[in-house]
Length: 305
Image 1: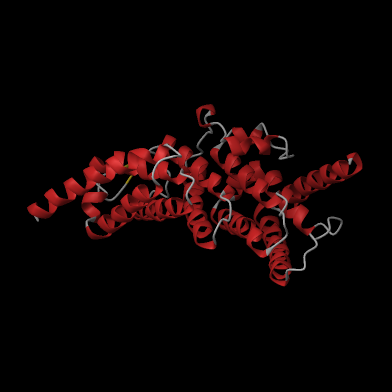
Image 2: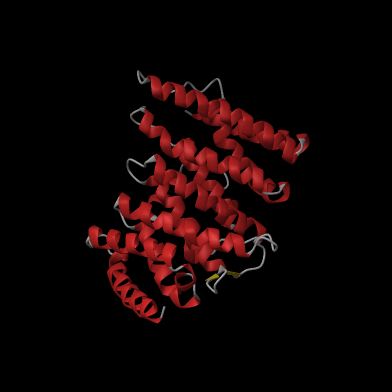
């Protein structure tokens, strides 16, 4: 065991050096990818050692790898972070994820700032060119956990966490909750999901549906898990893309791709089901009032155009 510990220390030291390049877009992606793969094997074989407080810097480097441009690096990092979150979820079942910082089973800590940074990083992965279903699934799982943490602790969105470069496009795209969505981590997350669901698919082919399908699954998961009180401040932001996708006055994108057409139709059906869930969860009065505002806004935009 002592020999194993010594070997693990050497490996961790080498991994940490390899992952230092994760913040540089021009670094050798193969080296970073290999380091992440080795981290995954060590986490599975030595969970107590890899989930100890002493590995906090390593996990920060793994987190940084989420923003590296290569898709394989993103996927490896996302899978490792999923393992990381499972540990925290198990250790904090009784508290309902309310007490920040969360403490893992072997001493690692998840601070409020960590949750905010991770929400920003994971949300940005939706913008990955050619996003695969596998990566989208990992993003959805992780953001569901992080969203629950944000809601349970009423985390405020800090200006220091700002917006990524790709987020700037969202500022002028009619979120309608620009000020409100900066107030809490949940409002930021719902704003990002709304943007993904409203973004035009060009060209209208099946692969382009991957981000939207994943974003809608995330939205369904959050609306199921969160309380009405947590959802209500963001209800208009949530309803905006759902309304747009189900509004008969907004035509379905024309496509000769049968897989795309079937997928888009499934998306619309799932939106209708989610709207019914929100109606039941938030109550008729509040739901109807917010949906009316969304419809009025959509109508005003059409007249403007």
